[in-house]
Length: 236
Ligand SMILES: [Fe+2]
Ligand SMILES: [Fe+2]
Image 1 (spheres, protein in one colour):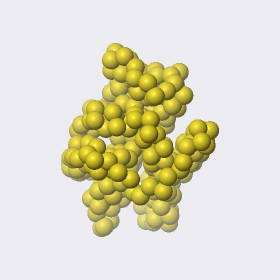
Image 2 (cartoon, rainbow, N blue to C red):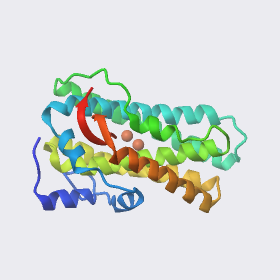
Image 3 (cartoon, rainbow, N blue to C red):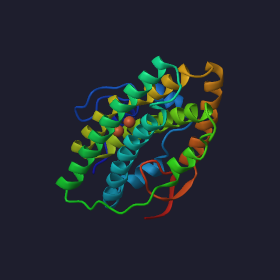
Image 4 (cartoon, rainbow, N blue to C red):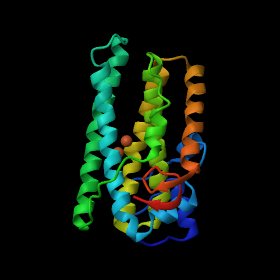
């Protein structure tokens, strides 16, 4: 892995074209999130010895994103939601699941090509911590699930852009290529949440969840994961 110059890093963090991928403006995502990725996380994630863990966890994240979308289809497919909204929800979740599995396959291919180990990693605290905030009662459960989905997509985008300038050209290009679909997933989740609830209530709830998310990103974390916090004494 290599470090790019500061100007290239700053341009990339705004979503400039890195490694030949499509240009995506992630400025709105950076504004949406309450904090940026800590420099200490980027430094740890870019250590060559941590690449198997980073890629394994990334693959796991893509699989879990697909599973979450499929779980949403299963839960709400025959529900009493308004028909037009339900159809929109199912269409978007189906496309999202396909795209996330495609990303899973791409990460797997990179792990294989580089002869890296697919590690037996446990789940990190990030998604668990965020999902613990989801209400168990409808209709809030669906709104919360959509908002949490959108926040995770936003953080993924922000991390891809933060990482890309520190990676070798192949990985930088791959991460930049993911920005387009992941930023669309972010928008899809938030639009769906706004369609089924009062706009002010959704906004207020989203800010609460973003505060929880920022704590998870900013606090010390003993594990290195794609969405982990500030690395402290990192172990598997
Ligand atoms: Fe993805
Ligand atoms: Fe995604």
